[in-house]
Amino acid sequence: MKTVTHWIGGRPFDAAAGVSGTWGSVTDPATGEVTAQVALAGTDEVDAAVAAAKDAYTTWSRSSLAQRIAILFRYRELLHARRDDLAALITAEQGKVHADALGEVARGLEIVELACGLGTALKGDMSTEVSSRVDVASIRQPLGVIVGVSPFNFPAMIGMWMFPMAIACGNTFVHKPSSKAPSASVLVAELAAQAGLPDGVLNIVHGDETAVNALLDHPDVAAVSFVGSTPVARHVYTRASAAGKRVQALGGAKNHMLVLPDADLDAAAEAAVTAAYGSAGQRCMAVSVVVAVGSAGDELVSRIADRARKVTIGPGRDPASEMGPLVTKAHRDEVADYVAGAAAQGADVVLDGRDFTVEGFENGFWMGVSLLDRVATDSDAYRNEIFGPVLCVVRAATYEEALRIVNGSPFGNAGSIFTRDGGAARRFQLEVETGMVGVNVPMPVPVGYHSFGGWKDSAFGDHRMYGSEAVHFYTRGKVITSRWPEPAEVAAGPDLGFPASR
Ligand code: NAD
Image (cartoon, rainbow, N blue to C red; front, side, top):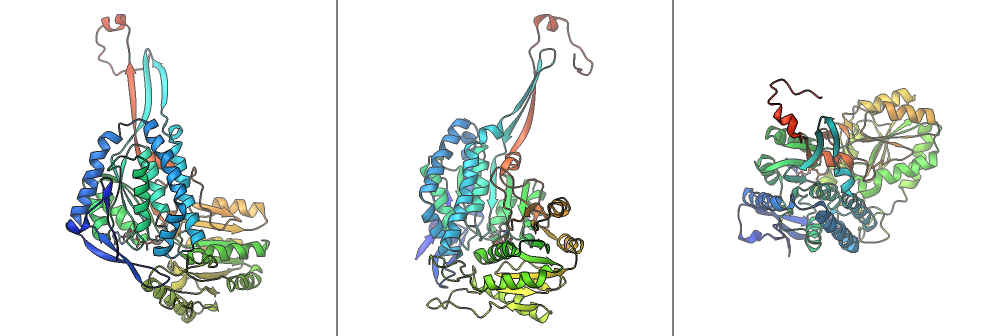
């Protein structure tokens, strides 16, 4: 059977030889079969990875920006050439359909491309002659060893949100991907080595809670970028901050799509189906709640249901499939329980995806699409992140009531409004309490040069991912004041007063 091992110091780590880790299983969600064994790091493997990154930092942080960028340009080409292979690995372990996996790789590549142009963002500021023969310069320098911890749902992209920017800034990196879908991250690291990235600049350790906690506590780690569920994000933020590290921790979501009666209801229904059921709902930007305002409700639910019934579900490697399975059996069963619970708590079950299977793939972790109408805001299906192909519809009489519902959620990742009324859209942009907002766009994932991140329980820490905020997160500021006095000024002797500008 295939084994997936750590990547430390520019080569596969001999997990058989060591040390304190164990092994876990990787499953193909479409067949239910175990396809690989993945090494799960203990503290020894974590120490080895951090030591490799610390070692590499001395040279890498002093390399010229031109050298670092040249490697990133070569890296971009290799990733682009191997995008199909990367997508195939994602599909085999995460389950999403191949076209969606290719989209994931493309969004990751976008950040590598952004990092290729980092010169402009890293540029410092200088003021000359602020006082007689005194200049002041502000520069930014790297932090050291950065850790990135990522979730199962984007096995390639989320690591690529983090390390290209971190290493372009002169840091070195240890990535801990999800052990449910670990293979894509290894290929991503192998290609970086082929592009000429020096050994130890990018390392991968697989593992679970043990590995993550060892990284959070490690004295040689300077900062932590995390993306995952809210409880783990909160834990990572608290623990790593207590250990004195800079932390950004993005959490879970419950993204609302508010539909006003004047909206183009066909466009809104299309958008809701795409955003709720794409990737089987396993996206942090998925729309999981539609808030239908006033008379929009009945017609919108009927148009969503018509379209949702037509979604083709099957193995991700079949080009005809539009939606794949859920990542594990346990997760599939949890999602199914939410549908059962919603019915018991008074929701109208318009579409019930629980009894669904795919011929020839009966052991896969399948769910059909579910559509729940008139969901109560105190029900479990509304309050929790389900992270599956389940769309809840909540009814509201007015815009004001709908906004109160959206802003009442403890999550604040993304929110969107569908309307033809520019004034209402503008109000929503200003009034909604989410970090990302869509106007007639259901999943407003910012492009690479704008930054990504939510509010409230969807993100802890004050820096967002990628864009200019990543440069701030992965560097620290330094201000240099220099004076080159004329001989006559020196001859005037010491001045014990507080230095003032002259
Ligand atoms: P998860 O929180 O279970 O795992 C995320 C990472 O943390 C993994 O690498 C995992 O190994 C590690 N981990 C898990 N439990 C841990 C623990 N107790 N202590 C330390 N580390 C632990 O998340 P997941 O199930 O892999 O991914 C789905 C979640 O990620 C959803 O909640 C989704 O909304 C969220 N997500 C958020 C964003 C965002 O940008 N806000 C993006 C993608 C996914």
